[in-house]
Image (cartoon, rainbow, N blue to C red; front, side):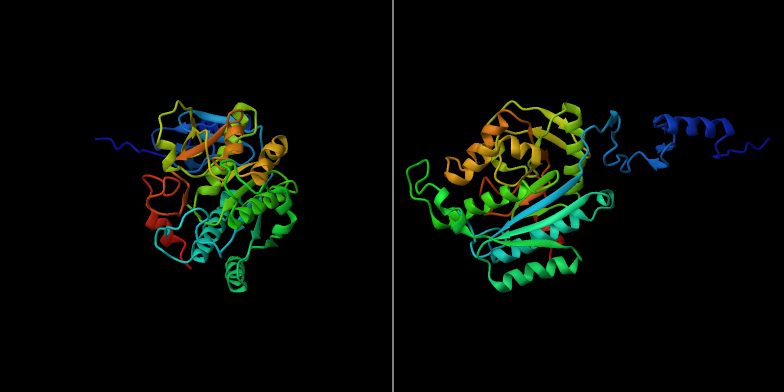
Length: 340
């Protein structure tokens, strides 16, 4: 019997065809071995290129017209206040600084994804009333990862006269709420100095390692598709399932995303969006609405806001809170991954 030699080496014409396809911007898939021969990658690898193209098989390629230039991560910290509006303990019942440290650690680890290397990422801490010991602990985290950051010690007095003394329910505003509103106001002012995207983060949100990558690549993909700026909420809150609502579904980089009409105050958007709705955003810092985030929800009636399924970030509040732990996520795993 004659031996048949099976060679995996591509022929001259195949090589030429691949070369031409690559120059023309086409991707050729060899479904026999799940390889994209024009990119020398397997189809289960990361195929998108920041600022150039978004590829999600089998839907193909989307040319990126809305390129992300930079990301500023603004973290609002207040280690002296355990819970702003509740007296219950958080999951794992640790001191507030422990959640702050793990939040920062998770964000730094997420920012170090090699697919984000070309993106300018800046960290900024806006702190209110944390002890020098807590601020030192925060500083040590950035030193551990050799990451530069800027620290702003919040001066509540700058904003206090702009805050109405009673809320929309006719109740007196607490001092903790006043400092929270002042911190949000300061973060909005910092957003005006940013180059492109801003991620506003509270200090009790732990992130999956792929969080920032998924958010940035999805922002480029969907903003390019709809030709408009968007808002991304990284958390799949339990309260979003409390009522049945008609929604829209989108395919991001590696996650499914859905349109939502409500969020809390951790979200990512662009400087353009902040400037477009400046008065609406600032109104959240001048009057305590019912709910507090009502100005954000008004914006979402006009602009696309999305949340991932499953969640990319976990809000570590009380285990029974409808504003806390996201469904179908291993909370303990995320907690342990960000231990010092």
